[in-house]
Image 1 (cartoon, rainbow, N blue to C red):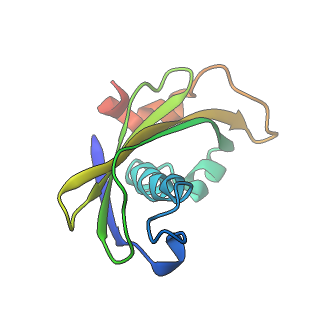
Image 2 (image 1 turned 90 degrees about the vertical axis):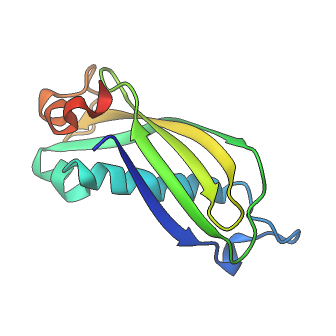
Image 3 (image 1 turned 180 degrees about the horizontal axis):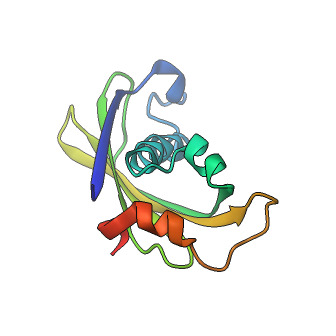
Length: 135
């Protein structure tokens, strides 16, 4: 699976006084996509714990293109980029309601062992679960 798409409706508590989605919530929307993508590859939190691993976000970036408003239907697309030393997850946030891209961005994750020590490379057992996704 190279890409996942998750949809949700913008809730009232995500909008600011200007009635648009507050910019920080886009990272939450990215997380919806990342969680679904990881789950689809057998790398949800319980899976990582069973492998004796943890992951940590070390970088995030969001480019805001158009506003989203309360009640809009939103699709978040997520896919893997490189997976060697860190795992790059790329995102697009789309307004299904209006048919435009609202934002795009990425997060970078590194793998830690059970004690929280940084691993230089993504472990083979994680890369195997990603398969060709990060190729």
